[in-house]
Image 1 (tube, rainbow, N blue to C red):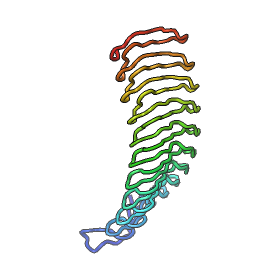
Image 2: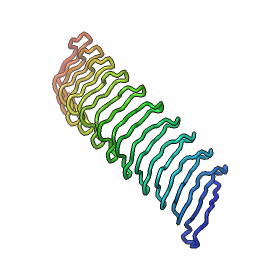
Image 3: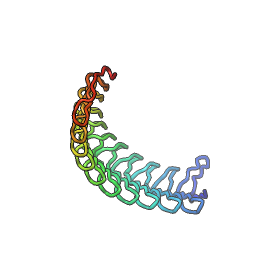
Image 4: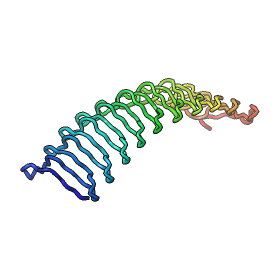
Length: 257
């Protein structure tokens, strides 16, 4: 790597703290870095470059700390992300971009933690998800979407964990799953549905484990299996049904056996 430093040094050689402009170059002569220093610390606007000459990043420093708007770029020149800093910490709005220029995500930081509403987007501009952050965790209502714009899921978070009623949908818009969540785990009745809207599974949960009656159905809505779980394992009578709805097998489980 070829390096050139345009600067002057303090009179005390033991300190060797560079003041002024500093520039660093790639071996091909392209500028790699440029910025000012004061008392050996970064000060003012600093820029770094890709080897092809394209700007890679640009930001401002005060007393050696990032301060103000900082920007990073894709190799094709498109903005990759921008973030506000204060006293070296992320503080204020942030935005990320796909390499085609479309917005990828946006939100806000407060003292290095994500706080407030956020949005995420596909590279075609369609929304992918939206919600809220509190102290760097998802907190409050949340929605996610398929790339065609169809709602994928909806519910709420508390301190980064799923809580309360949640729904999930097939890409064709039909309901796929619904239930209640507590501390990021299903609690009570959890129902699943086929893409045609027919019931698929009805099961019960306690403390994140299957506990209670269990039933599964085929795409025509006909019962396939029926049983009971306790503490996450089969416990009690079970039945298997054929396509005509007749019992083809039955038995009893105890502690999963």
